Length: 238
Image 1 (cartoon, helix red, strand yellow):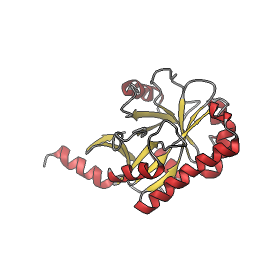
Image 2 (cartoon, helix red, strand yellow):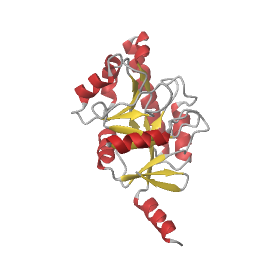
Image 3 (cartoon, rainbow, N blue to C red):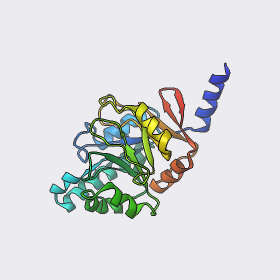
């Protein structure tokens, strides 16, 4: 075995916990084809240890009454978590928020289900207002796929970092441009499949040396920088 293969095997052994950091379920995310149970099953079948459910929260969703919207968002999370428990897959709550000020998406980690009503209240505000309000409360806010069509790159005064590796097969996320943005601005780098459809599973995992237990634990591990990315059996160093 060559030195490169040895290093790869060492990294796979050192970072055994494979997480999908960007995934959507239906009906909370109407653009997804996957029920909570099917999403969990497909992630589990690819060898994942866990997933972060980042269903959409978009300002125009406030057309739906708050109690109804929050109940559906919470139900999808609890259904996904319950399906994960049956199959031995850890499920962590996250959010993909689209604020009113511009056509951008942001992955938000660090909150549990009691924060869902606050997301509803804030999604018709600006990303900067949200970030400035909650940045001191253990939150991690990442600009998702900043270089897709219509997206506008934001500076580090609005986010903690960037989703450099977004491997949604149906979108051109211009990964190289986002890698350049991260080189310029720094911060936390994340990656995920942006899992919506049945042909998406296993595109990209974020791999940790320890299993994140909840959203706060996930933030701690991402801030530490101690993780690698994996696609198929290939390891990508962040």
